[in-house]
Length: 112
Image (cartoon, rainbow, N blue to C red):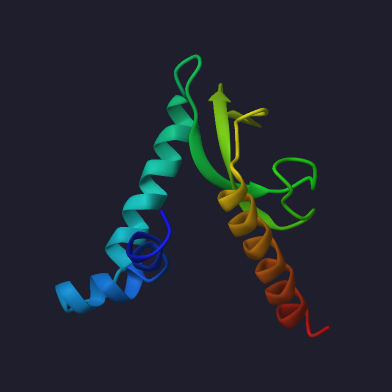
């Protein structure tokens, strides 16, 4: 996970522009369509999807009050964060760094 793969994921928008010669907006639009599909049709029992939702500050160490990607199960249009998935130390460090980034971005956006 560390190295080239992680770097490519972090810079995927620029990569799409570089390869395709056009905006990554279609990729973002496709992701939005996938999210709406999952929200509308739900997840199969025992499965989950990853979706950005507001954090309550208690799941997977994400700070409270920011939009964070969590594993969700969805039934009848209602999502629920899936508890208890194993998170290794490498991933915990990445989640913590992302949480700090989001808090700093929120401060900037609010002029604080």
